Image 1 (cartoon, rainbow, N blue to C red):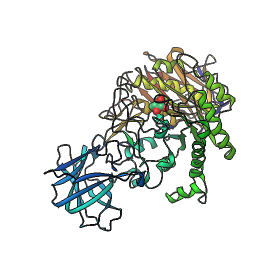
Image 2 (image 1 turned 60 degrees about the vertical axis):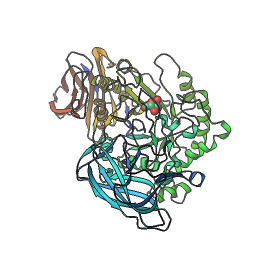
Image 3 (image 1 turned 120 degrees about the vertical axis):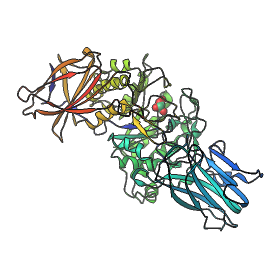
Image 4 (image 1 turned 135 degrees about the horizontal axis):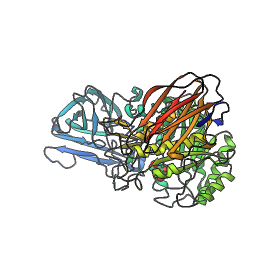
Length: 633
Ligand code: AHR
């Protein structure tokens, strides 16, 4: 039989073990969790009117102009000026197409707001929600109340009268005069926690339901940027949203044959909001910062060593922003943003997929400065895995010699790789640097292409591999699938954990595997062996066991990657007393099965009761073909 040694736990499992990786890829943030419905709301995209269409009955030059303040307002240089003469509703307008349309829900309140400036007779703004056919399905009128030539913000709310996945926002201007507009915005009422200007609730709920131990943000390659100018700089993502300077998204490229010319980062969702999100869903925050190197896939740009100081200062300041007293410079900024209490940030990544000796050189400077000021603060260092050789041996040796807290390994590989590597960490040094399996996903086809699918085959291979992560929780203390989100009409990378359109979202089979691990993690690893060996593919079986101190339960995880059913008896050694009533949670399907919007739960867990022999301390399991089981005893 398979034996589980309950008497002597092998090691602890960290509460951070199973987490999430968030990046603004595949319309993850703008057009994704950031619930703003207006694309290019402040006209700062490369083409100022991208996403907008001018509606006019008769053409008059100069009625709609984009003005550029350039150096006078580097964070938000552009705005639109609309000039009208005795205009009625329907004469001159602007339509915004949203991010692949706007998701509008019947009966829901929509908050329309603008920043405006005018000095003559007031120009009214009629806001209309349109369905895909151009019919009005909601409307409100904003009558600007100030005419003092200064910028003001004003809002009007109205309810939608129909549901539409591909809605639009149309503005008509009525009056006689000129109005300048900026930050033209539309948010639904039903944001996460009802926060105005907040996040899309269904998507965030999917994350909360994972009960993740940590949330890594903001990426991914976007940390690095196309070049250093376009790197992610957290300081530019905090404070009033109109002062957050937009950049082109690193995924604004043709990748996986998916061009995304309209992909920008407006930073309505910035570091404050990420820290708040982590707090909301009970996760540790794990920000990753640029280490002075741009994306290795795009440019070989590095900052000279003698100019690295501002990058290091950004890291130090971030810790102060998150944790500092409200009397500190950055702690005060956090307090002004509405969070006087510290976020209690404990860790940070320096560099994402930066691999050469230039990385080590820069990392040493960061590490010295951060550890000098915050000795207990944990740092995540970037590394990789090479399927064809030992490209990362040099790097791993260097990082271990530096006594790195965490080494971040990434692997997007075939299902076979995951199965073959279920024992990958069995031989890792228990006393050295810990591993953060920061990005992984089973790819049924090459690359991040359209031919990849989130099949049960892929998810089952991840489930099998994750038994190895759990068994080695003494070494692997954090792990996250990547990428997290993808919009069906706006993705660059495939497969992904959660798919969305403008109205709905569904979890892939991989999502439910992640969830099963996270919700059933336990606090201690138990030894689970067959003939004194861990189960790493014998008869296509993979298994791990844990014990949960709080509930005093034994938790078994078994993946059967065999096309045949198999029966196994599991002996629970060293347990004094057993409750015969146990829970069995199962995922089982055809390897090619997938989830869809229509059949969102096609491949998902189901639960039943099983009976354990309390006398012999044995449990017998019939393992269906291609199945994954969690047993709680
Ligand atoms: O997850 C997608 C990308 O894969 C990440 O941005 C990057 O870190 C990795 O190459």
